[in-house]
Image 1 (cartoon, rainbow, N blue to C red):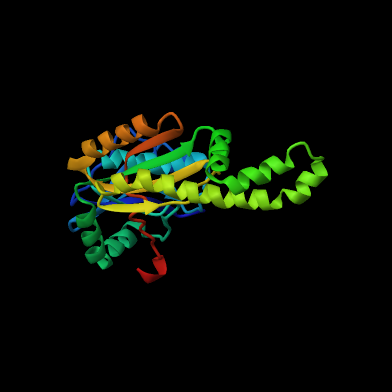
Image 2: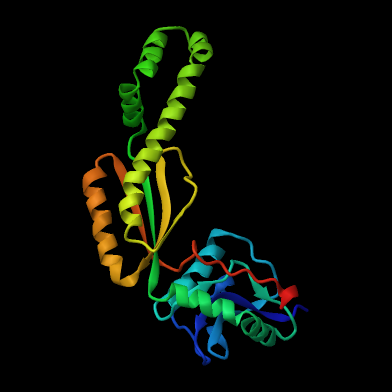
Length: 257
């Protein structure tokens, strides 16, 4: 029979036992989300079987929803998805973790205090329009394209390689330039900026910003201004505030606790 464990969500500054209502724990179990306090810190947990959690959409959303629920009341440090205290004394194990790493956790909580993470994704609305812009801006590529028009498909495949390579390079340059026009004004408002990989060809920005709460409205206004200026050709997706996933990720190695 498996021993009961505790699933870890995040670390907060809290010295008492308390529950978080209105949110379901990972795994869909009918269990509470609550704190395990030690000194001035606490780990937010739920009871869990000692198992590995697959990174399914349902599990990831449950993990994030608990953290977002806690964020309504506390500054938090997100713990990496899938972290479970598996020992026969999981509460004691968690308390040892909080004790051993309390200087680190205190420092990070102080850094995150009064700040929120805001995320921006920006995507070109119409890749064909962007392709035509690239040709208009690059006479050499335009001549190459025109020289291939009307030729048999096998010739286009053979002779079109330089055009394809040139367009790819020009698109990357265009993407970098347009990303800068979006990220630069937002970055001036933020404390920190973390760029993530763009996941599709037409995505030009996938960036997280750590922003003082008192400047969030200013950030909102800048996003709205960018949308007004660029909206006809760029689709903006604005997310937040969310826990500082891109700026803090607590990893636990139980062998070192």
